[in-house]
Image (cartoon, rainbow, N blue to C red):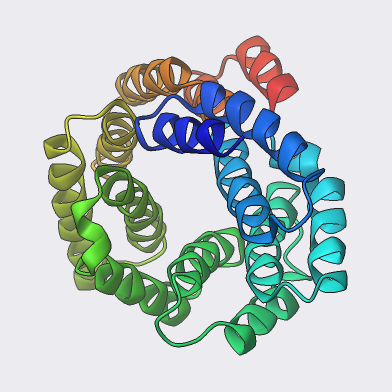
Length: 273
């Protein structure tokens, strides 16, 4: 089971996300039956939840995440409580509900020490959260500042981390560019170009998908043809599908259909979402 956890983690880091969910799920089922394997079980569950998020099925495992959190609490497993609280944060975001997030994130902050990797995930969850809510330039700018700090951390040597953090930077910078005007908008468009360059340099399919979506957003801001923007978003969706990321691909296809005013295409994509 531990070997399968390692293979699943490798698949996650290399962008084979569907394979990662299958290997990690199998490992979790074995480890849960083994007494005294608390750390190993928590690790398998943590990476499994990350893989499920990337595939796009977080809504399907919310109930299970709540069971895992309750299990960690019963076992007085601090690391498990931190891990499953963060995963649950992504799950509630997946169904568009932010009401529980402040409670979950505050609990994680209280339990995690200052050097704990949970703070990286807190920054990512909050970045998503700020993009969900009504535009708040101050809050979004602070979220972007924290993402920049993470980009310069020791995690920057991991290709998966660079692409994933870059994706969050792209979302926040794009939200700020669309919801500001004048000099502020120009500043965030410059940031978008910087992030776009870093994502392309990664030469990795998940990063390329983010870069293409960012390029389409820049064209929209320039007033370019919506068909041209839609074509870029469709290309981004194809990269997501190659990694097994069903939800990310479907959301991009939905956006492309909306840009083309293709009601049937939007309906088809919405069914997947």
